[in-house]
Length: 58
Image (spheres, rainbow, N blue to C red):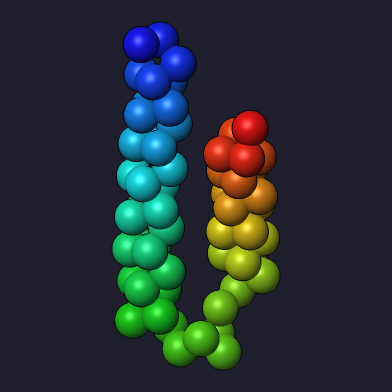
């Protein structure tokens, strides 16, 4: 049961993060055109994605 709860917890975090990331990217596209994406925003999104992927692969 402990392992199962841990997996559910990880998937829950991943789903929540994914939903937030989608909302953030759609808001950026609405506010700015994709050309005007600042490098800071790109770095933030890529670092968040890179940080979120390793725990899932385990």
